[in-house]
Image (spheres, protein in one colour):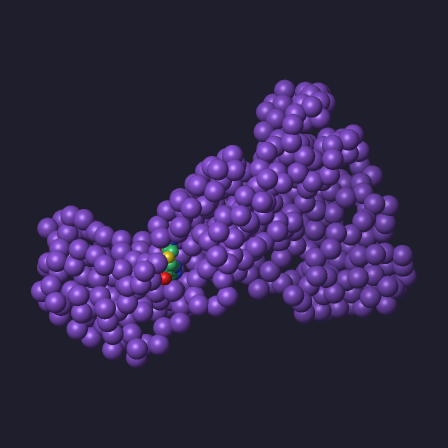
Length: 464
Ligand code: SAH
């Protein structure tokens, strides 16, 4: 980060600007939102600037800036749109102790003005350090559309109410109150005017002071295969509201980043062969947290209902009278098959698809090999790396064609995704040669679709 974002208190402080054209106008429009003392130096000011001066909103000096003109200024804007003039005025201001910004000259500026979304007192500042103004504008447009215009009013009225709301105990109760205000009752009341909002706050506080604390609850949330963009909106919301997140080792750090900042993160890593918690310990952990009144997110890779030992955890909740619900996620098979441009089912090829596990609690898992060995069958094999030779042996023994395509996708949907196209005959050897270390899904009966553009090719095309 080359530039550190801060919000500067400008009320009653001096801000000087040199320039009277378009660049000066753009900056002044922003600066006029503050209560700063504005002084503008311009020999030929735009009519708007002259009007603002007449209205007493700024002090206009119709001359070139001179030594001594920036004394006491906190900020200075060089907006003459002329490199020589800007160098001269900014040298004066810099010598007189102001922080300087030269319009369209990032290198010689000491600070830059971000793109701003204004819902005063809520202000969003967007900066790209000059790298991508287009991007900053796009983000701004996106936020403008997303933040209700009344948000500023709600925040202003809410701010005045903060002390009163301190009657609620800190933590969950207070958060629930404010969440109801900003996202439910407040916006509704806003349509009827500011008085209605103030009344709503009183009523809401009464309600929150008298209601019982929300009891603990467990959301079993599928986190998808790894790419944070493959989280559902419901999963994101659950992470946003969680007090405790109990997660598998498969969950990527980018996804954990999305949990509420105050949330307690617990790694209940059961994957791989390192030290791991037993299922009983995990069940007990979930129940223990929920019983303290916490909103618990039990975050599982992919979809929680697929090879996720979900039922044991649900049973533990039910036994302890803890309420729960499931948020579905995108399973590894969906991400894997998308990465090779194929369908899991296809008319005239396979009318069903199986989700298999390579091994279960007893060791390599047994399946209906005879049916699977038939031509056209497709299966998504989870946890299949170690079982590759076993699966190959069983299928060939039951008559499967050794040339049947098999594709293994490691780290599906993640930046380090790898696709190993193989056949039943060469699967174990190809897997050994590939030396996989991440989670891998085996798609039996499917080969990558030919001529499919890879992600890096698409990127290249985009930037060409
Ligand atoms: N509930 C999960 C599966 C848990 S079992 C889901 O719906 O995806 C764990 C197995 O899932 C791993 O051994 C691997 O076979 C598969 N898996 C999970 N994430 C994966 C990923 N990103 N890429 C490939 N396979 C993955």
